[in-house]
Length: 113
Image 1 (cartoon, rainbow, N blue to C red):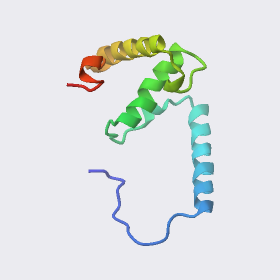
Image 2: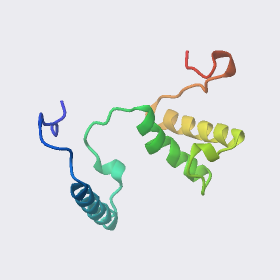
Image 3: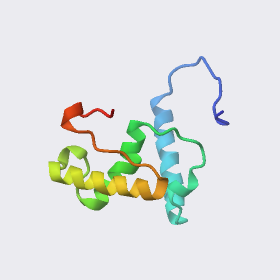
């Protein structure tokens, strides 16, 4: 159960000003965390369910950027680079998490069986 979840209904959609305030606040928090030498991975203690999007953005893409500095999107990778990033990422999660996966192949049309 999420200790931060609240069952709040009603009200209007958040305002543009609230969004600006949120971004300003989070910018301050980020600056203070950075100044304190904190790493987000060591700070977040709320359970976050792994999904395609957060695994891609928070795990795969950092490996991609370290492997190929200057590359910001998977769309910029060559076929050879994509395979290299996969191999590095798969090896890293095998070592640190004890899990790994085979790269989907042409016979199964890119789907995990």
